Image 1 (cartoon, rainbow, N blue to C red):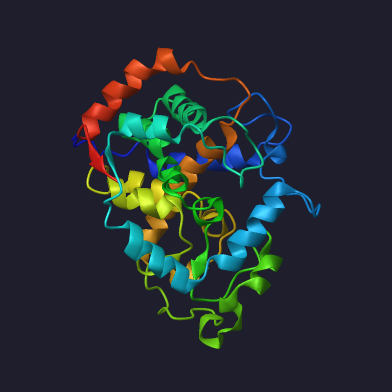
Image 2: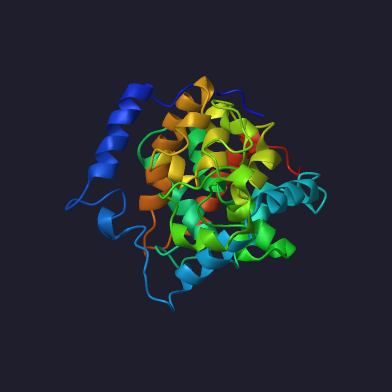
Amino acid sequence: MSTDSSPLKDLDVLDAERQERYALSDREAITTDKPREAFRSYSRAEDDPVRAFYRLHHRYQTLDFVKAKKREYLTRDRRRMGIWEAMEFLNTLVDESDPDTGLSQIEHLLQTAEAIRKDGHPRWFILTGLLHDLGKILCLFGEPQWAVVGDTFVTGCAYPDSIVYAEFLRENPDSNVPAYQTLCGIYEPHCGLDNVHLTWGHDEYLYHVVRDYLPEPALAMIRYHSFYPWHREGAYTHLMDAQDAERLRWVQAFNPYDLYSKSAVRPDVAQLRPYYEDLIAEYFPPVLRW
């Protein structure tokens, strides 16, 4: 395991870079395939598959469901395999919740990592880009995609309007539980995001698989990269503690690479593999519990 936990850059510099990336309009952001405003464009058409995905996601992601999935999966006794093996295992999956790419998962992971490497960030940050979506192997353990992917939000408290397709949350049984529909719900103000139950999915699962091997900023990027109502829309500040403020800045530094690196240009997996296998070996043992 590598002990490199140095910051990738001064966080004030990162904030400035993030603001520039999010502000791009007629220029392009990281990828040359499409402009920034074309990403995360969600259709209102009734037959849109991403819309249909979120109807299921929002209907079934209850607090009880989240707690049950944590009990089921955080024992990590499904399989033993290394990081690259997990990437190959995942490679048949196409994310139904993502309107921006139809590439395989390994191609998206390499696009993200290569964009981070191109900008000269430390090796642990490049590695985070490579593996951030590996928790999607939950689909290959038999979970439906609505229990694995999609934007995350906090269960057990009121839903902010900034959640994508928030109208579908009316179909969630928790919306009829008064104790879950106050601002803080079952939580204390400023309890910290470590102490809330986000909707279940690949972020939380992978965080527990890799938490012993990566520095704290990397773990924040993995655990919260799908938490768009928080890191993009500014929701849930009433639940944050002091540590979450710094985690937010790391997640916001990572997000443009995850989002805007999506491109139709396919990476050369065979050519890149030796570099990334060496990088994986710096931080991880040959086999992990999944």
